[in-house]
Amino acid sequence: MAAFFVCPGALFASMRRMAIVNRRARHEYHILETIEAGIILTGPEVKSVRAGQANLAEAHCLVRNGRVLLIGCHISPYKPAAMHNPAEPARTRELLLHKREIARLTGKLKEKGLALVPLRLYFNERGYAKLEIGLARGKKLHDKRHALKERDVRRELQRRYKMR
Image (tube, rainbow, N blue to C red; front, top):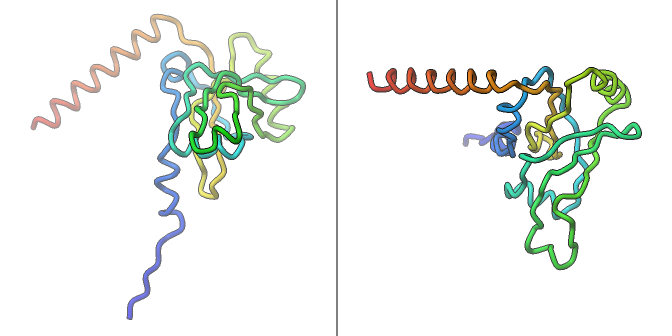
């Protein structure tokens, strides 16, 4: 009789792939470094994020009073729990980082032109919600045009390669 064993990582591989991604951030900013932070969510918000009902496009992060805050992230209310627990969809949420990391980020953010931008909201292998934030510098208009041109050339090369 053969034993059936599933690798625990394989079970959560699909969950890790299921992420809310801020595609606009990569277009608007040069990402210098990324940091993984925990995020404080209520129960219905967790269900909503698992269902993919979150939007990071207008969101940004701030360091205030020694705490890192996520501002402008819209998480739609989870319908089955909405009547019992009405949560504000675009409320400010606190991120969980070590004091050393917060101090380091505060020092780097004092440098002109740097910002904290949310890149990805996902669940790790243990089932905790994580937010990948990036220390970023804004792109100039010519940088954006160059990136679009590069992407078009890459897409055209892939299309030609597929045809063969």
